[in-house]
Image 1: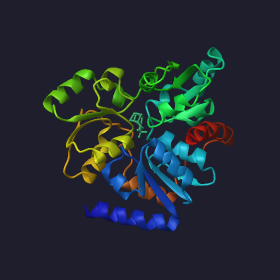
Image 2: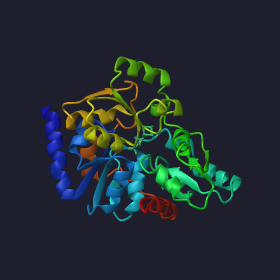
Image 3: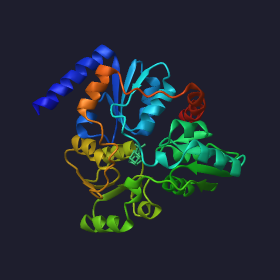
Amino acid sequence: MTESRNLVDAIRKLKETRKAIILAHNYQPAEIQEVADLTGDSLELSRQAAETDAQVIVFCGVHFMAETAAILNPDKVVLLPNIQAGCAMADMINARDVRRVAEEHPGVPIVTYVNSTAEVKAESTICCTSANVNSVVASFTDAQTLYLIPDQNLALYAARHTSKKILYWKGYCPVHHNLTAETVRSRKKQYPKAVFLAHPECRPEVLELADVVTSTSGMLRYVRESDRDTFIIGTEVGILHPMRRDNPGKTFLPVSEDMVCPDMKKTSLEDVLRSLETLSPRIQVPEEVRVRALQAVERMLAI
Ligand code: 13P
Ligand code: SF4
């Protein structure tokens, strides 16, 4: 306890000296969310990265998130405290795959979930997140067909909200894709009065059972504003920390204890402190890739 208190104090002090800001995703370990200046979902963190005056951005999340911050802030130092923190879904497609998709579907806009590498974003028409995918799809007023990458479940979710034809890459997030409708049904049976919230990265048959489908920050907003008192949460378990902290009178149950993203759990307080001390590991995107990826990200942020 004292040791982690000392670490937190040292991080806070050094953060001032470095003129740094600490951003943390909603899935990060509780102690990392607590030491962060701002927490949020992928879209909010992208916006915060775009708006900050800080010289140093310590991104507590996974690699693609820090890369997005680096795409938006070429002159700042963007740090990913644990360089091993990747994303299984982002690794399911590469730039060559996207070029092949574009060749096979000439003229079809490619809508890329931010959970992707900078190289993949650079080959894309526009980016989207789980919070804005339906508005991004709707923004293509002239296109009748769109190609969504890399998440099949997000694509199928978007397809349910548009009359456009949605083609898609068959990637998935193992944490969400492994959740079955059977698990959800049995949890709902245990807590029949609970509201079930699910992330769009879940399978369609799971979303079918959900009362609310939204991004991680959408979930945080929903439970705060709701007058209901029990919620089953269908996303990574890290989000239970802010839910319980901010809503002491309400009950939050993970739909499954197995929904743990190992990469989101790799960042420790020690990593954050070391990162501020050494200004590493630094995430940089080659300029030629960055400028093309930036177009796709900025097109999204303008919506
Ligand atoms: P949100 O954008 O809803 O936070 O989800 C992103 C995600 O799955 C990060 O892994
Ligand atoms: Fe990637 Fe899924 Fe982990 Fe998010 S939860 S970082 S999509 S593997």
